[in-house]
Length: 355
Image (cartoon, helix red, strand yellow):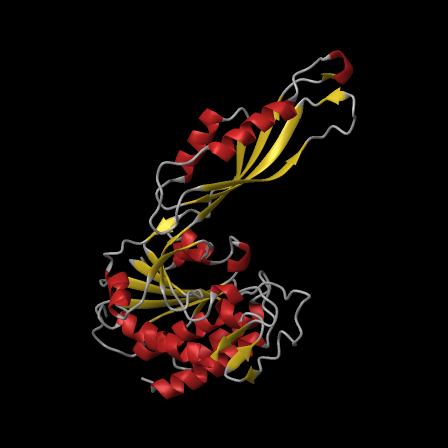
């Protein structure tokens, strides 16, 4: 077992290597190489599927339950407001700068350090399975979603995302729907046709007024926003035969997507077509042992408005990690070095009562 000081130093060094290596979604092959080399130099046998790296603890026992430790190593592209080199990985005033430092490099290296801390422990009550995955930033299908079917059975997960080390026990789902309203064309001057715009406006008014009954203590109500509206008619004197609008629906953990779709289908004139139903709302019970362990450490439970790979996991998952979500995707992204050290300590102590 490495000492905590060694784990801190190695984690910072690893994160600097990852920051210095561009790893945009679908282009994570080089950071996958870095993670593989780092783990194998640490004595860990690794597995790779596409750009996803995974490993199990040294004394893995298939008869025991398994905890997944997961975070991602892809990043968004740097925005135009950067004043620093996004790949420099410089430490200034205890801040480690660089693209992906906060989202979610600090979480990833902290989870790796925690995994290494327990790697050679014998007689653990749980197996530990580490997965550094790809394509999280684009909710891609070649990340954790394609990896899960080939992994050993998992009982629950810790998903590393910047939460200031508090416990995101619920997470909003994202449901995007195309809505099309049919009318009939006619000449505007002769009061002909069935104006699809007016019918769509009736729908939109209903959406503005409607309130879903089940309000989450952690995520609040289901929220629907009309984000686009258009027709294919460009002529001033033609009543449009169709109108389309786009719905951004943030679903709390108390509704399934199917329930939300059914309510809308029964209430709107539009024909609704979901673009995707993959990013579902999720929650882990507050009574779950991993949540109770976090509460015992003084951590706060909350509901996260942002989605993560947690949405793709068919088992309980706690989202938690060092860093601040407010820094994600911002110019001159950074994480405090102390946050990473605290992250390593917190992950280790979070697991200790269970394993």
